[in-house]
Length: 146
Image (tube, rainbow, N blue to C red; front, side, top):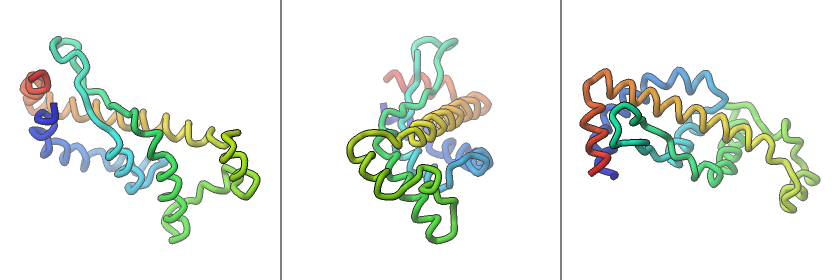
């Protein structure tokens, strides 16, 4: 099923450029967005039904990269390129201990993950609209099934 994604690399690049404004308007930096997209795979739901078929984002790997998103944000803040999230979560020794014990501090991560999932699905919807507008959707949908 990777062949279908290989066939739309150029289309993804076009959608990436068009989607940059949405990323810029989001709470994610372009570096964070790159990590999010690396952790995301795309599938076609109901590929055998032309009326219901749609591109969906598989975001099951996002929880694994959420700590790295925090690191990127922190590094960029130190370089003056992004707001630092550590102050909103409290930070410090007490929060580190709570985190090590699994006693909280994940509320922000869960919210950011939900935001990432929403944005990635918007991207998938935009990609499908692009493919439909270029008359490629049917071919891509069929290639997915092979």
